[in-house]
Image (spheres, rainbow, N blue to C red):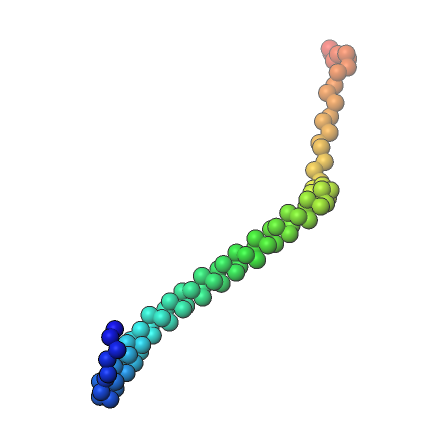
Length: 95
């Protein structure tokens, strides 16, 4: 824009136009702020979750028996012993 000299009336008009523009823009800026804030909160929670997963993986890598310990804490499943089948050569008596 060229270096123009504005009269005080023109300056006042420009100020009013600028103020109107900013006031009309506020609802859009507020909506954008809320949107960006929610996105930042989501990213922060994702980062925390990823950090926890990485810490757990590093801990598991340092303690390989940790996974074995976890298996021990699960409810142990005892094998069911099968009853031995009758393999005797006895025969029923005929009456």
